Length: 194
Image (cartoon, rainbow, N blue to C red; front, top):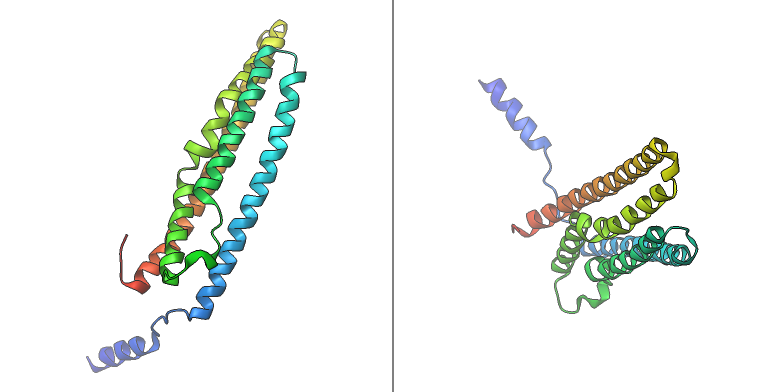
């Protein structure tokens, strides 16, 4: 019995309690998080400019009317996505926290980014679907004389788009789960629950 007790005491004494991060460490990680969100959004906005430019051109140059309509729908969807990205997931500089305690500010920003990532299907992916469907339908209509080959090519295009959408959705859900772990850590430090 004494061997068991001494083994338990030895094991318990070897475990060190986690120390909360220092304020300097918190400020550094907040700054790093802000820069990562800022750069992610800058890349997203640059992609939006590229997509709007490319599909605006396509709206005037593609052969089939459905392809041109689909291109306009992609432009509108892209503008909607850019607006939602700004509204839901813009980078908020830590200097704007004012008198808010830093841990509350950090938690609020993490929750905001988590929620944006978790809901990406509705505001980031689905706005592109109508335009893509119209473009594929127009492409298939142009190849109608190919018969079965047109259907196969259209089906492959749809499958590739669905796989791409599924990958983007999965990556964003993974990111949301990672952010939730940070939120849980802050809640444990502050002794709170969401």
